Image (cartoon, rainbow, N blue to C red):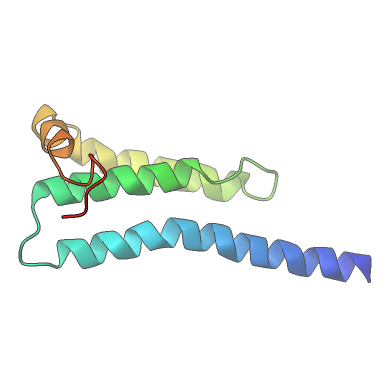
Length: 100
């Protein structure tokens, strides 16, 4: 009985961790579909996604998923690794804690 309960608990924990990664992706897609979106919004969304990936616990069960997420994120981030995008991130209202 204890094994079944622990397995179910782990399932819900895994779903919660996956939701924490998927929510910034969903928010980024919704933000970037707006007619008012800018490259700063894209860079800001990438920063939020990177932060959520770093919050994935580094446990035995999550190591493969975490490594894959970090590798995929780093590949995509190389496309936006320019000083102009970094500047736009610093002047983005979300960087200062204000919603745009």
